[in-house]
Length: 479
Image (tube, rainbow, N blue to C red; front, side, top):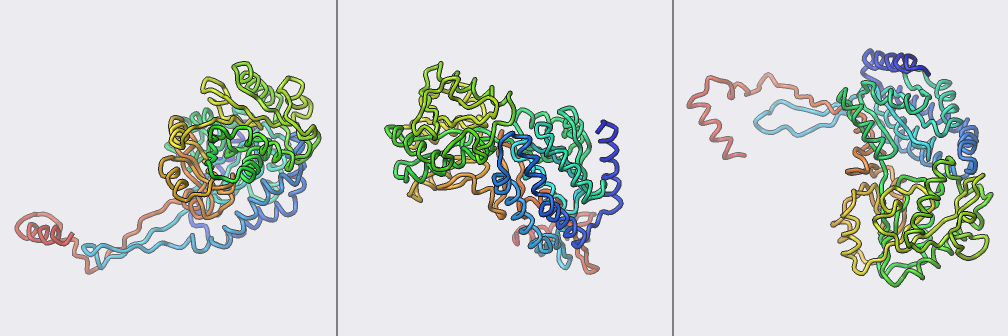
């Protein structure tokens, strides 16, 4: 689309949202059912488009990581939407009675969604589904790094929705910047912290509220009493799903000192169980572009040059291999071998940047206090994972750390719980969606007070005098 086309689509949605402020339950449900029908009838086409964009990413991976999440979200939303829409009664304080009040949950109007490439269907449609449930119009700008998926989304959304209900605009980073600058009633962005800052600045020009989901350095704390085999398997799954290209993937492990060899062996066995081979395995995704692939190779090689011990795992060979240029993964398929990095230092790029790939640094700690201090010394992460048996230790860690979300004795799974809000904190983002929290994020909660003809508000009117002083004295004692 040209810039004029994008603005015209926004104007169409803006005018429609102002002309039809009240959006009945039946209309909202019917829109959600259209999204459901689109996925049911055209999921295979979308999965093929995702595979074409990645080079290697099986439709089964897209089924579990994109479609299953969306189907559970749709089911949950359809089941609860009528209750979420109801005005919320509130208690009225005695001095305002017999007035009564409630909170009306109204659509905001037009919601913009700028979505990323790593889960190009799920992260495009999940916020759109919730915004539609809240009665809004939606403009979606998907990533230019997944052009096949973005094109299919544009075609399908245009087939199932009128442009003033839900539309998809395509284009490069300049198009995304234009979308971010439009006067939306709310804007959702999922991506890097650096770009998130730019989106927030652009939205601020119109005082547009934003939801930013930005990722970051999400830690795994392995406690001394955990089941190492179980922890390694779950960490490997969380790290290697989509080849590590997941915003809440474990970014590094904090491990009790002296357990390095045990963890390395357990992680190697876990990789072999999940992915018996890497090259040509459709369940193990490619790195999205040659540029991203080169960045990961450079990051790993820098760590090795600066003294880190790198264990690159080739499950087909049955043992770790030296992390040389020829063994990091094939450049054509961009299927990068998983690696563990021991002895990483804060100066290394892989400890400064979100990795977004199958590289897992392992940081040894002497005391749990040291692990907590390490986490708290950096920006607050989008996710935190803890593995252990002691509820008391778990609760102590959760009290002393702040993160967007937590999964205990597993990874990733808190994102699949529709009654838990999903979002970041600090540099990992702000605002949360999913379930009712997401519905409220895309609503205006309007305060309504209905005054009674028997109201006593005149007691507070001027002119003030002895009667006023007596009334205020009584109220002070009552309050």
